[in-house]
Length: 112
Length: 113
Image (cartoon, rainbow over all chains, first blue to last red; front, side, top):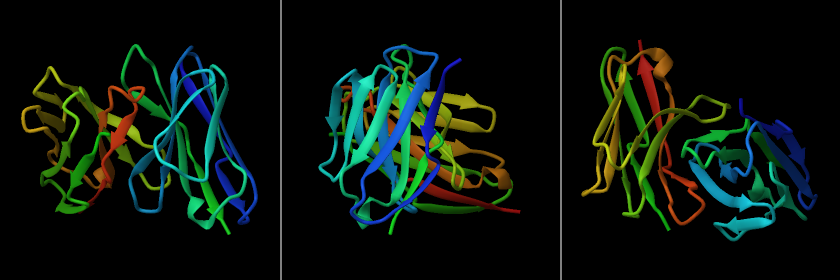
């Protein structure tokens, strides 16, 4: 069966520090991968999506970047975090044979 | 891009009553409309979905209706229970964006005993 791993679960980082969040998917190949951010009490905002290795599309301009070095690995990064980067970050994957998206457990990032 | 509007933002009902959440979307090419339930601090979980070739779908106490002409879809929960309390998100697929789901802002549902 397919599973999605996302880590870490929680993270507290100072302003100006770098960020790296990792997401991996097992049990499927060539998935579509996504990064969403959820601010406290708000909806899910699509940040990046990827339809293949090295293919990244950004939905909103921001202080973050994404990379897909391997088929089932999706990384969210920042060189210098801002206070406004705080939030709940969710990785998701979609099997192209279906349209249902499955979410990772999420990373709660607090920038202090 | 796709814009999904969701109402209401908060909804309080008594146990046993029905709850209805409504969403509209802007991209007429969207063809997949899921609903996710998110409990506090947890990941969203799919509860029901509907595709554009269907007008209504039901799964026990949960039903979803879709009006493609008007570009709106709704979630109906009957005989609500306290464990139904959560945040519910509607979404629409963006055909030209890697099938990414564009979410509404969510509805916080509270079911009081």
